Length: 286
Image (cartoon, rainbow, N blue to C red; front, side, top):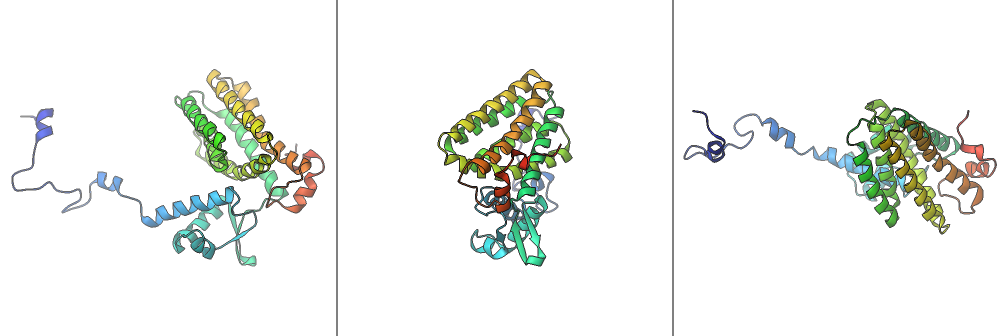
């Protein structure tokens, strides 16, 4: 006779026997394997990558500064293997570069060419996201509103690293709706690199009094407009709003370089001199 749900709930092992643990006396069960903790070295490497990337983004590790295993082991208390693997992963991301002829590993620099590439890639990513994002993504709007609420809380705290992290999360959620993994990786790379520019810009604008408050008001307003365009399924509005939002970074940087006496740390000196001229200094060609 088949057991009822109640019978199954109270079924016990035969007297004198204890339940067999998952994997005991044979191969581990699939459920046990799925719940197994990742190898310690892998989790340490992930943590090391996150830590070093954050230090690069918030410019604790300045552009063009040298980093090596000794620094990561002694200053950041990383193990030798996670430190080495983290460097390799960050090199693959383009956050650091290995220069054998200079005998070391260096944080990616911020010169004229680098900033030009970052702002152009950022604008391309946002333009494509606006053109191809799927209005049919059933959770897109709820996700964006939740991210925006967290973003606004971090704005009030002036936590620049978290502000840029949530801004990245907001825009990548739109990119993810497209369903193209290759484009998503491109978009994620562009946003990771632009975060470093944004942190640098925030720090300079903070010293200018009310300007930073005004800029955050603009950012929040533009995010709300993007959400409204998605809600209305207004592709024309979206393809105007998102590239314009991305261009804000370029405009702010050019204003800082040309108008203020306080120059961002770590920038190439030639870039600062060049940007004091026409505003086309970092604008994309064509």
